[in-house]
Amino acid sequence: MKFLTLIGIIALVWVVGLFAFADRVRNLTPAPEPARADAIVALTPGSNKLFNCCVDLGFEAEDTSGNAQEIAAWARSKHYDSLIVVTSDYHMPRALLEIRGMAPEVKLTPYAVSTPSLDNSRWWRAAVTARRMTLEYMKYLAVLGREGLHRLTGKHEGRTPAAAAAGAKAS
Image 1 (spheres, rainbow, N blue to C red):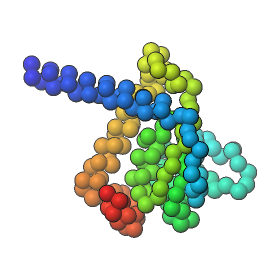
Image 2: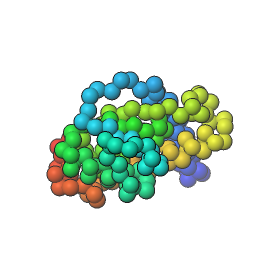
Image 3: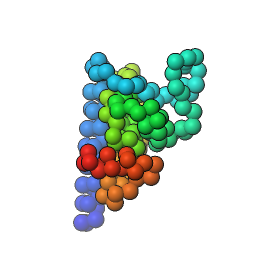
Image 4: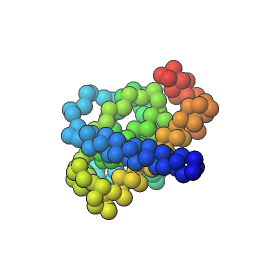
């Protein structure tokens, strides 16, 4: 009986967390005018046809973690201290966690793009939007757990020694 109670409490905390996450996502838009930054990074799938000039494009990343590694290396190579991060509203919390994990020394300003299907307080009633939000929440929790573990152990693959030191100072 105690085990079932524990499972019930964990499930309740998870559901409350999911709805808090969804509320956070809904409140990311409309995004306020961002402050000036050194550069803008946009996390978009298949972005190789967006621009013809005047833009650095990265093609190595296959996922958000890869985007974060690529962005961190690029920002360091350009000596950028601040970035405006552009991505969809539901993706923004995880994208920020991933990039902060790889580049803790860089100031990030979120600029979320609204996802119309999620711009509804009853997102959980439609299977497609409930699935999208739930999957993104699960990914967010996984990254949050990984970053917490790295913080506790002092380890973080992909960080340069200077970035790791900056991350330790910021803590």
